[in-house]
Length: 601
Image (cartoon, rainbow, N blue to C red; front, top):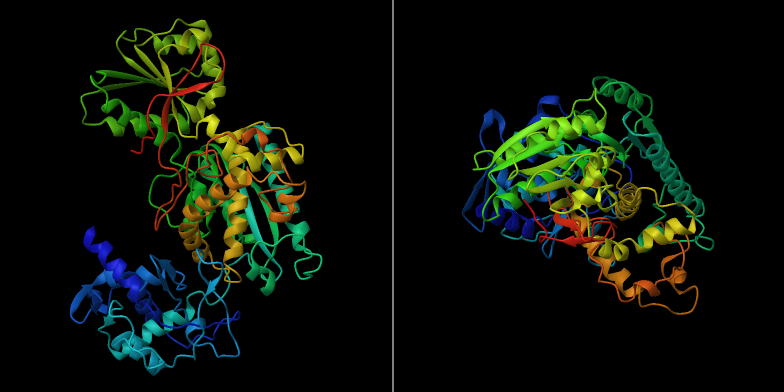
């Protein structure tokens, strides 16, 4: 691991080809499919024809092979580079390498600096690109950093790599045009009508609000907001189009429905989304069509590695892993855990994750499934019968089942509930059950959330939107807000791979910066209108001046969502990675008491 990280850090110091570009794609040189495949494998995998590893020499004679020296490690799948540490790794797609001085495209390289753009250079030629790749000399005759690999490639391999570079990020991804960017959101059939309508109304309102400002984007005199200075000057902002894909029927038919909708109208990304259970067919569609899946509100995110799907957290599987770590750390450990669940995707996924996390430990685990043919109280009574007095209970129950516990006497030495399924502090847990009951809680504690969600609530209150489902509504607000910021930062580089890469690099910094700014804003109680002047009337994440006095003494913000903190790194797809163990402070009421530190399994 240390060696791989060292190679990555070294590579990031070096890839110092200058850059220029143009909005229009550079014409790709003719090449065969076989040549493009050779170039693709060199770029993405570090593999030469015949399966031999790519060889690169750094610092004179330090030899690297294969994936550790593949171009993608620094320049990313989009070919548009990145910022790693204090070094900018520039874009090397063909339209940047070969663009003329009269045909340039800006790329925002470093989000930490107000706007640090790529530096222009003269176009590369086949000969000067070969000199850069093989000898480490750029087209200005300058020796590039010794951390840049000097590759051992023959002429045919160089030509194949050149052909591949010319077609990376050569045309905007489907769903992007000169006038608009089209998104879709997916809602699965298991979502109840109230939550379904809540999400649709909120997303459509935000799109209308955003487009209401975008209409005047080209007229600087009447523009109501400015996402970035570059976006304003360059006129790169686009109108949004939003399609709502409401799936029908069983999950085994969803793939065909998604394929048909996408065939009729391609979209740039799936934005938000909602499911009370599984998401696998939607996830698979995104991987298959290379469509980013942008922070849906789902209980069972897909746990397998993903390139295009981002999730808030691991859902109920994360709760199970947190509980397992908590139990395994107790002294003495519980000898027996009985988990109770309803048949369904969420219950099965949670139970399987807990079973896997406790596998091989000294804790015995038994699963009991509620009988779907019986009333809730009777099914619960049967499932809880003969639970040993010293057993620990894990109840994967939704609010209706939680409320049905009123008819039963508490059992078990200690009891745990899922905050995501039971609705957190709003769970209708009977008073008799609250003693010895705790909850796996993946959200920021309520007293901290009041601060973190202040601008979400200001926006909601201004538009007279009732708070029906805080988790869902705040997640939708964040997903759309973060997409706005990310697309704005991309300027006119509308490529899906680049969207993914910007999300990975922006999220942690964005959340930290916004939290600091909002903390400062809580003290900015100047004359009416000050916050509007600072943030803009129609900026998506503000709205209007809000009464901040009640939060002046509150804790400092750590983020802008339901979660204590969100962050991503290269290849990471779960933005929040842990949970608390909490309990109710009283037999009645919703106040919570933190029982553990933030647990990251």
